[in-house]
Length: 129
Image 1 (cartoon, rainbow, N blue to C red):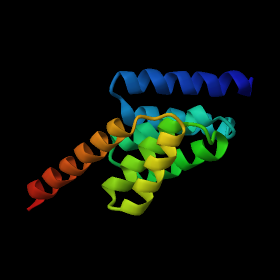
Image 2 (image 1 turned 90 degrees about the horizontal axis):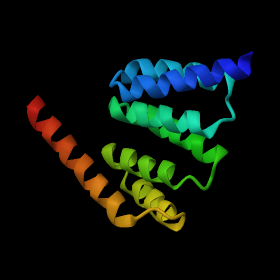
Image 3 (image 1 turned 120 degrees about the vertical axis):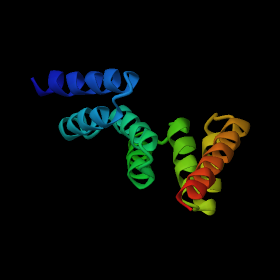
């Protein structure tokens, strides 16, 4: 029963995210993770959802859980690097980029995403001022 339930929550989370209902997706991914805490795919999608909402520290936590469960997930390292860049933690950003690249990610793509997230953050700062 619980095996089916976590999968149902996870799939509903994916559908919610695709439909742009990211906060709803977070709820479903969190419920799935409570039932199936050893599934890196749940935490990865939770991290992406938090990232979409701008909740970078929560996103970093989720990507870290993904990495702890699946140390070869280059996308988790790459996305965590982007989150570190957003919160101005350059050393952890660079460290995660190097690991992601060593696991098969394309450095140029990650660096471009980091550049874009920094630009977005600067625009947000200017809007506040």
